Image (tube, rainbow, N blue to C red):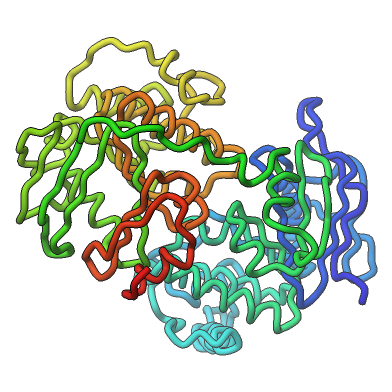
Length: 486
């Protein structure tokens, strides 16, 4: 069967720098085609060319058997190609129907025909099997997963036959990812071609039928998903196998940095945890089991109301984030953009944010600190919003390294960053542990948690369900996480 879209020999330069060179990509109806690669591999540029935001310097795009040349995103939309961006573009104070038909509102007798607009939106929601959204609902009342549904409904309202999705799960909670899986499957079943861009290998293997790998703007391979293993895919992306991603585990545990005994609050019960210098302790559990609640309790956001809390053997009372920081506890939040960074401030300002606010303006070698986290930027005066996800996360780590923590709580530290950047974060965490920091690492990616941890704690229903050794299987972790025994 002929593809809906065939991109052949696509090349693109910016200011003399080649970002794509002779890349081929085809998209078939009823198929999910994953596009993967490190940041800078050329994925975004290829998507923007497909969407009409950039014009290729060489190559051609054939759509439904006809050669096309898009001069704008509107041209691509009219041709049936839609992009669902990682950063959603909806207007929060308008209704679902108003967002779906934004700029294309049907008119009757000189006025917007709201009845027709809402009926069309309702038909499209029904087509996707979405019963939890109404056309009149204000978008701001919807969770992120349902806002993505609205973006897709908007694309379908323009008769899109190709939908490209850029990191669609980056801002989703675990239970919302399952909803997205169902949605992608329904799009595929309806004959739409889905281009799926993601750094999460599990999603790539769960959802796609084909995978294309880009590296440094060059096509490395394009293959059926069932013809490549995760290890082979990682090697194609970054030039090293999957098992080489994780650093060596701790050789020995040092002094106890943090100890909680029988701790609890409204979300947690009977939490007993010890974190020692030199080790990385993994914290696993299903969404809502209490993983992030533990992080927030240890960092004083939602303080413990029962039990004992010790830091370096001394009884402490952590009632606020400031108190936690003063006792040497740092918190890398799971929401990097919403809680971890001031996006419109510079790299330097973000790096010094916590130190200045807590300890006053003491001089520190910011450049050396940023070199230690392998930051790639145009300089310390660059605004953080213009950095890649991986480099933004390095700034978050540098911000906490500036206060010289004894304990680091890392909640989803590699969410939304590419495989190469993950390797750097893994190495940084291990280097911190080797320097005497105790690390509690929370992750939804079990291969990552098992590969990084010296031991693993598992949460279930607000309690600790058990502890597992470093070499445990995913099945053993999930058994405890679901209330069973390992």
